[in-house]
Image (cartoon, rainbow over all chains, first blue to last red; front, side, top):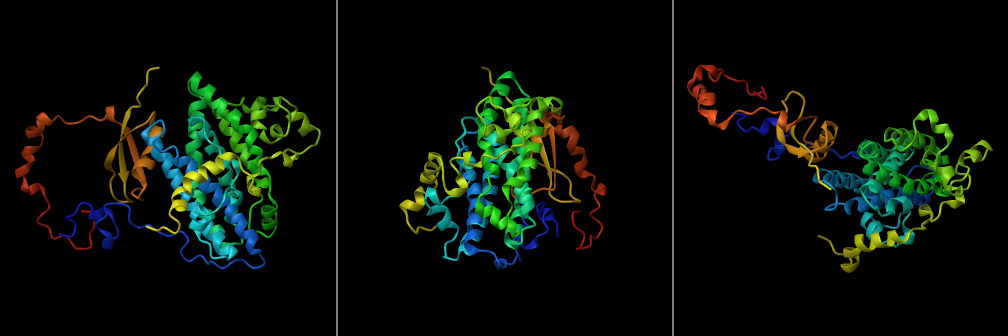
Length: 327
Length: 95
């Protein structure tokens, strides 16, 4: 009989019947033209692809470091899945960077044979997490920012960047959801979990200004419709960030937000003295983030914290010890 | 500090439209919402599903293995309950 095998009925793919589940994979980039868009500087496009690719690669490594250390087995796998999603995005973006610069470097060259000063990731991606609350706060911030960015990047004039972004939007939507649920769960949980989630958010908040500090490469490519200027993401980010922190009881409800709090006003807070006049600065007409020079070190320009070198020592260890090795 | 263990959930995944949900395993989670997230991460990583159900394991009533004879054996000789005498066209799936 045709349906003797119980598994056979579960798959449409007769040529791959040995798999009970999980056939029918598709290549999201199939048929996407790889040509570079007209009138775009190759080196600039390569740098931009490195920025987005390095964000994903370095955050992916940080997530991988949680494997065997996560509080629950189920969450360990969730973090590994997110790390793998990001690693996939990094591979596509680094490949695009290599093609764009035209020196014959591939994704492995760029991931495994570059010094820290060549990395363009946000410093926020490389920071170590003191505990699970710090991790979910950082993951929530970075995925909120990345989702806003990828969503806009789907309209890029570079068809490859647009296709990579379209693939990433679905993945990062889930990453943001996962992280936001944990921020709310811990923030609105027990007194101890609230205290530790609050500490994580307070540590993170001064580091967020970097997200909206545009690099000349980003501004230049955004002006020709290829890239997204991160300064344009601040409004959406603030809305989502505030909404989730309020749900997590880490910020006062919306009605009293105008009272001013550094946690909901990270850009101004970053450029103000501790306990300073974030609200007063806005009232006086100084736009949030005006003191952009204060975002130091500036990952987009290749400036990093010592954490990046530590990550690369681990991540590139095998590639350095076995040059040219393949398996 | 005492460690509170999360309750157990049973996970059912439907591989595609038109098929039924199939029990695929269990997991621990704090509530139904988290259980759905965990089920997605544990049991659909390889493209397995289009729909997930989760249910608290302690909400499942199960038959008693001691009742096996009374429960199941009487149906084993009722051949007339099976439509095996019909010819099934080759192109009809999922009978």
